[in-house]
Length: 395
Image 1 (cartoon, one colour):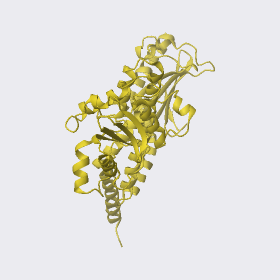
Image 2: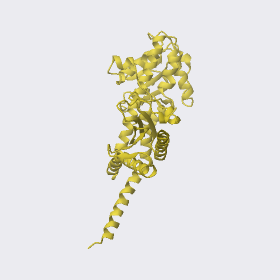
Image 3: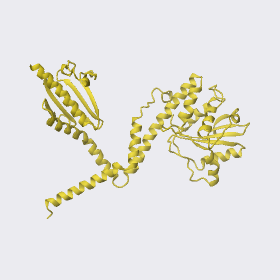
Image 4: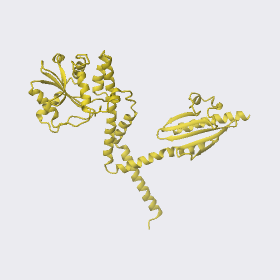
């Protein structure tokens, strides 16, 4: 029969094996990058706010909606009455950001117009006089490419006698590229040298429609209506981009969960994370019990709770601490019906004097995760001040 030592050794081996699987998942660089991107997205402070597009329409995610709007601003003969201003900003942007690919002359577009769905092209900017054109393919709605989509557009304009100066590809997902799987070598030779990949928005400084066209246009126009529409449209695209990036990150994470035992490991990590605040509270209880002599340390009110109750000058006070993965929240208050009553023994403590009390009377102090030592030291300082004041009261 297996001995107790054999059983314990086998049990320890199982635990070590499980821990190694968890460590492998946590230390995986791909997952680390996904977590970093997800955290960055969630921490983004951008909010859409009061926006005319979402207030007046529920079709702002559709292709035609964005193409109609962009085309209207790019049309020198449009109702914005700003002439070639917005088109010139686009041309200057292309010449600056894609200087190795394009060199567009403004004079070739003095009499240009922008149109929608000319030969299925989302937006076509063209001059019948100079026979120059710019093709814009809008993918803000997130649809995939049609077979040989960009080559077909290029060929159709060449057949009409036009020179294609640039093809602008605008995806909402900044990582989406045109599908070239069905392109011939001739297609690639024609398209790639003039292809300008311009995501709707990016947060890493790469060229994008919002920062490099919409914002400059809104700053240059002297028309209040154009300025307002462009500004709110830029906000709309930012909002759509952030939501899209969240979905992309989660989708990639889902794929990693399909590999090996990653799902089981992730569920184990989630379960352990749920219990971490409990361990944090128990650690505080153990340390405060062994390191303080003033007051009564207790826990059990809630799993993530540790508190201290004590008397100063005949009045009772409490320090309630709640632990979470975000850190620690410490509440200090007189244990009375009116918690807004004075707390005279804290007058010498800057940490308390510089903290605004809640409307309910409690002083609230927050500490980040990994601050156990600082929390224990802080509570000990509070108790030391309370003990000192109490002894003076007794004398």
